[in-house]
Image (tube, rainbow, N blue to C red):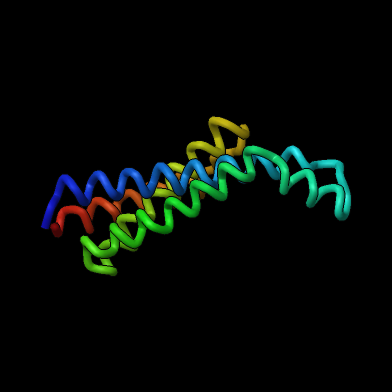
Length: 120
């Protein structure tokens, strides 16, 4: 297996996935206070929303490349690192709370990823 290539593709996937979620959240927040069709028009024309969609489209192709390099069971588990990066970005950019349960959940995810990574 091409370890450096796998790491690079995984990092790019995590970056695109995290950026996509953060951008869509930022764009969605700009539509607060609007109702009905006005909200949807505002969301559809917001640059954050559009860039978030571009990130997700790019992530789709990077994810396919990643899955071509690793077994599915390993790839899906390693891809869960995005859950951690998205949670951290939620805290940093949107002031979301990191409760004890969320921190324990993140620790368990990281432990699982470490265990899977050690198998390779």
